[in-house]
Length: 102
Image (tube, rainbow, N blue to C red; front, side, top):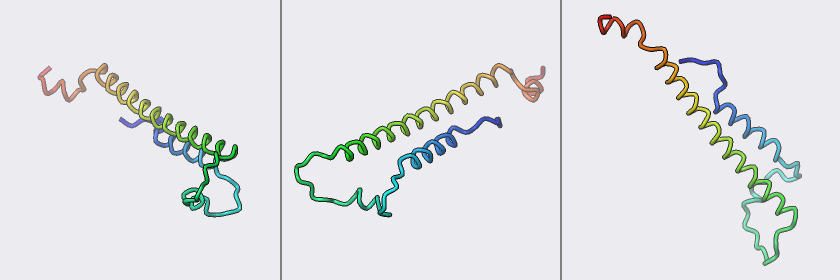
């Protein structure tokens, strides 16, 4: 059954794209991923307030994306249930009436 409703997957992709844009840092270095994954020998110093803020922001963004994924799956499941119940409420189609001889 074709519907004109937006696909939950499209919503999720747009949310992820917005989060990426939101958390892009205007750093001078182009290789932020290499910086993040580089094994830097850290003394037993605690992270700076800026590092803690970045870590918390990333953790919150990750949880937000996971929540959006769960929401998209729930919306898709609800949509499927509604379509099934609507199809059952409409009853058998004309081709099924002919098959039973009614």
